Structure formats: structure tokens, C-alpha cells
Amino acid sequence: MGEKKGRVFSGARPTGRQHLGNYLGAIRNYVALQDDYDCIYCVVDLHALTTLKDTEYLREWTYEMVLDWLAAGLDPARGTIIFVQSHVLQVTELHTILSMVTPLGWLTRLPTFKEKVRQQPDNVNYGLVGYPVLMAADITLYKADTVPVGVDQAPHLEFTREIVRRFNAIFGPVLVEPQAKHTDFPKVLGIDGQQKMSKSLNNHIEIAASPEEIRQRVMQMVTDPQRTHRHIPGRPEVCNVFTLHRFFSPNELAQIDADCRTARIGCVDCKKIFARNLTEYFAPFRERRAALAADPNYVWDILAEGARRASAIATQTLTEVKAAVGLPPVR
Ligand code: SF4
Image 1 (cartoon, rainbow, N blue to C red):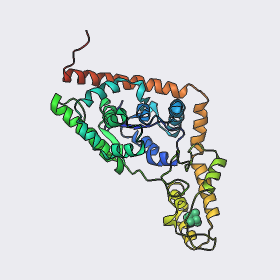
Image 2: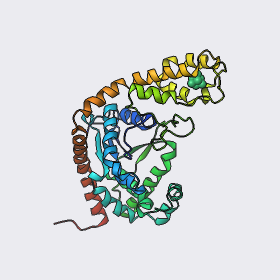
Image 3: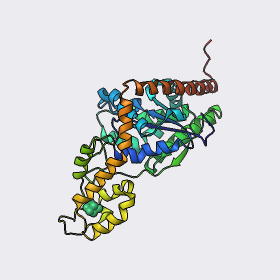
Image 4: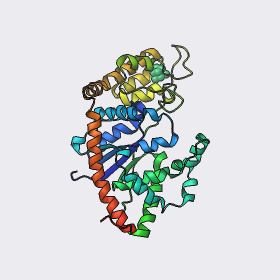
């Protein structure tokens, strides 16, 4: 890796084909960070097991997600490491060691844990409690000094920092305390205009969608609820179509705003503009995606190479950690 500002680590659960929320919230930041940082991006498949839902799709969803990442511009040729968490199992060793310095009370008091207990009361498993420790192992194994976080994820990273401080206070300064890189993660609503865009709610628009699929989804989008008739002026500030126009129609924004407020444009025509711009925006992406998908091994080869490179860093860190803790070396 070259001379950069630092090393970024970020992980994402395998969720298959990515949608506009994933793109605006994470992927475009992942791509931009490559300019200034050595980047490590991980498909956290072990984390995905905590819910034990849809595990039969993990392989397919990993493939589709990474294909989207690569087509969107994540580029191993620029030094970026992309790999699957379970392919570098040193993370489970570090997780075990870090679990010894993590008070159980810290974990059970976390609001995210309490929320999970509410969500899946019949499956409050050990992995769910230890989830933040595994996350700390993910970050520290690769000595990442920078982690991109949105406001709502900041407490997760703070937890990792606490574990690092505790470990280093007991065993010496081995682990790197990561800093948060606060990033603008806009909350993208789904086509229902109510809830966060999510595949599980089926209110999403995939970035790999065909022009016809884009058109169909966009036409289903909920707009300003007060605009029940074409002649009623609209309120762009409460319309999700307009929110997304901000990203994909920057040159037409002022015009759309004015035309909506004066009812010079109807929602159907406004959506047609949005669908057209969205289709054009992702056209190069769709082309690259199709080209990369022509070789069914391409994604898996990238992930294998990523795992080899990640493993080299992981082995080095783990050797230092084990020595600091006092575990006997292998002869
Ligand atoms: S005209 Fe456009 S911005 Fe205005 S309410 Fe309809 S979809 Fe939304």
C-alpha cells in the first residue's frame, strides 16, 4: 500500500444487490476514500449469522454485493483490499482474546444489544452479545486508524476504542485506537416515502436495475401526500422524489422546485425526469457490472486475493497480540 493518510476499515453485511440507500450511504464514500486512504472493505458474513436468517443466501448475496462494489469503483488495483470476514479466521482468535478484557456489563448495557433482544427475543444468542467484540476484532486486526461512521454508528466505534484502551492499558500499546471519520450518510427513504430504504421492506431501487425496472419502481414512489391532484401545488421539501433529485438531478433542481411549487409540473412528469436521470447516472455502472459478471470467477478471485493480503496483516497483528498477552509461541 502507498503513502496515504491512514488505513480505513469498514465492514458491511452481505445483503445482495445494493440499492440507492447503500449507494448514497456507503458505496460512494467507499469509492472516494480510496483517494486518500489505504482501504480495507470487508463482507462481514460472520456478523450476518447472529440473526440466523436467510443464511442459505450468504454466498449469493456476497457475490452480488461485491460485484456492485467493484462495478461502482472499488478497485484492488488502487491498493484496496476487499475480502470476506470468514476467509481470514484470525479474527476469531482476536475476538476470543479481546473478549477476555471486555466486561460483560459493557455489552449487555449497550442500547444496540437491548434493541436486538427486542427484535429477536427467541434467539438471544451468545454471538449477539459478543457482536461488538467481534467488530472490535475486525477493526483492530488490520490496525485500521480510521473508520467511516455516520452519527448513529458512532457509539459502536466508541466501544471499540474502549476495548482497545483497556487492552493496551493491561498488555501494552499493541492495538491501534481507531478514529471516527464522520461522514455524511444521508438517510434514504424507500419508495414508500416513509421508511428507510431496505431490501427486507421491498421499498428499494437496486442500482443495477434495468431502465425498465427503474421506471416501474420510480412510478410507484410516494410524493407529497397533499398533492392529490395535478393542479395542487407541491412541497418539494416533504417529497422523497425531490430528495433524490438532489443527488441525481443537480442541474434541474431549481427548475423542478419552482415548477412543483407552482404546479407547472405534475408528479408523473417529475418522476419521469428522475427515472431518466437515474437510468443515465448508473448506465456506466451497469455496463461495467455486466462486463465483470461475464467471468463468473472474477469476484471470487478478487476476494481470494483480498483474503491473502488481509491475512498477512492479520497474522502480524495477532503475533504481536499473543506475545503481549503472554501466550506461548509455537515451536
Ligand atoms: S412534482 Fe416532483 S417534487 Fe413535486 S411533489 Fe411531485 S414528485 Fe415531488
